[in-house]
Length: 164
Image 1 (cartoon, rainbow, N blue to C red):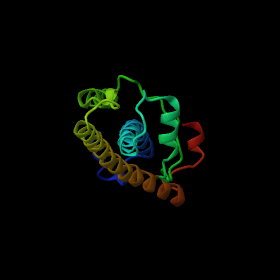
Image 2 (image 1 turned 60 degrees about the horizontal axis):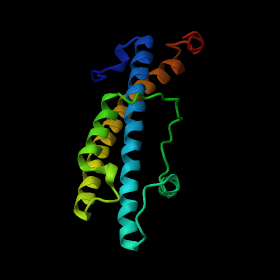
Image 3 (image 1 turned 180 degrees about the horizontal axis):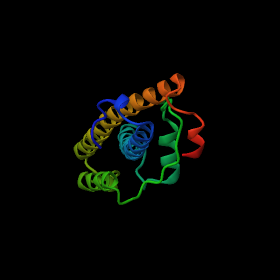
């Protein structure tokens, strides 16, 4: 989607449409970013397991629950939206190919240096998605600010939200 240069030049319908499209993009990026973060968390947990000397086994559901239960992030202050991201979305496929290339599926048997490389590559992917997400938030916020301004100034009818 092209950059939103001047939201004030857009009609209210165009603002809503552009914001909805950006939110859909953000939903995909956020989903894939969380997937990448989860993979990094699992790989880092494998590094900790090796340091602690815990015997290796296949990654179990309880391993995954323990790793994700350790998350300390505060999350987004934005309200959640229902998302339905297809497994064949280009970003999902890109992450899956990356994980295959770095051997993530065999995380318990990777050599230490290969595990470190896998973490670095997945982190790099996640950081790129984070930058994209931040850029999208700035655009979404600009559109939202203009919509709020119009509602406050009477330039748009709040009741029209119910019919859209």
